Every structure is written in structure tokens, then in C-alpha cells.
Image 1: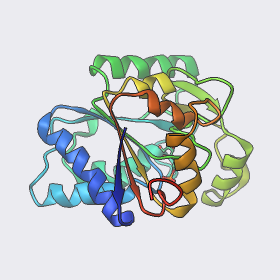
Image 2: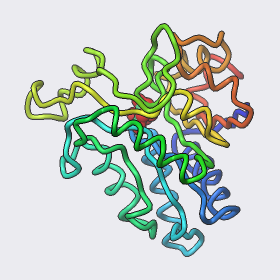
Image 3: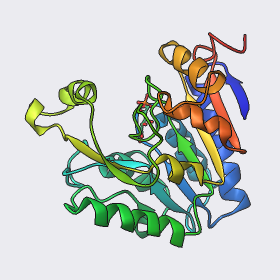
Length: 243
Ligand code: F6R
């Protein structure tokens, strides 16, 4: 595991975007695994800027996103499909048909999860998977538990997550109760993994996930077992380790 220390959020975003852009330059038809959340926003801004300058070409890139709410249509501005189009896909020259997000509107969970796993396999696997880190160590929607969940699966969102997401919806009833997410095995099969972390509020979990024991109670700790992981974190996120 390589840990890059960034000064602040902007520097973290630039360093992480550099790694993604190196991947796209080295293998123009690569498959990128992408994430939503607040952490990657600066990375997507930076990639867009470099694309606009003519330094990056996404025309042969494929993408697969980590997760999506179950039961939320693409047009809903809280869907991860909507997020990805707004923050990256519609701003660069990636072909829309080459982008993939789990289909939250597929009611048959098993069918959708199988389809997504096959899609990733048919693309030849993920060349570079970008991850954010949840405060409890979750990656994708893989929450702390008794075992590492393996492949793409349907999860029941924790009450805390539903509560936290309530503010984005008209009422608590509209907050999705489930999501489709790549599993730990799906993530661990990516050839390279890039974890982006920022902020003092993540310092505790950075220490646990990357310097503590490997345990399903901290899902991100499994990344210690992958042989090509790069963590790009800012000073605040690294404040409890790597002084
Ligand atoms: C996003 C995802 C989540 C986030 C994590 C961190 O697709 O799967 O695991 O990466 O919750 O979120 P932020 O970046 O908002 O702190």
C-alpha cells in the first residue's frame, strides 16, 4: 500500500486525478471503477479541466460505478446515475453507452446483481477502482458486519444511513431502503485500487482501516490484502497516523 500525503482537499483531488489520468493515458480503453459522494467531486472537476485543455481523452474508456439506490429512477437527482452524469460523464467525452451504474429500477435483485458481475467480467475486469471511505469503514455500500460480502449484492441500508439521507428527500418515506453495491470480492478483483480521503473527521477511520487489524467490522481494512492500493489522503485525514 502506498500512501500519498496531500496538503488539503484540492491537493488530494489533483494527486488522485493524476493517478486516474495516468491510467487513461497508459491504457486508453481501460475500465475505470468510479464512486460517488463528496470526496470525488474535486477529482472529477480536475479530470474535466484536463479534458477541456485537451490533455485527456475518455472516448475509449468504460466505467462501472460501485453502487446505486434500489428503486430510484435515473432521473431522480439523488440517484448515483444522475450524480455521475452531472459531475463527470456529461462534462467529458466518455460515451454514455460505455458508462455503467447498477440499475436501481430492476426489481429482481438477483438478476441485476448477476448482470452487473457479468458486465464487469465481460469488460475484462476493472483496471482502476476509485473508492471513498465511509466514517465506519464502509466501501461502496459494504457496511461493517460479521463477514466480508462477496459479489454485487442488494443491501438493506442502515437506519443511520436512512436518517442521514433524509435531508435530500421530500420526506423520510422517499429515502430508499436498499441499494445495489459491488461486493468486497468485486472490489478486491480490481487490478489497482485508489482510495481518496479528506478531512479530520476521517482520521480515526484511516488509522483503523489502513493500520489496524483486517476485520469485516472495518470493511476497508481488507484493502491491506490487495497488492496494488494507493491511498491519497490529506494531512487532516492522516493526522492520527504517519506524522
Ligand atoms: C459512493 C460510495 C461510498 C462513499 C463513502 C464516502 O459511491 O460507495 O462508499 O465513497 O460513503 O463518502 P464521502 O465521500 O461523501 O465521504
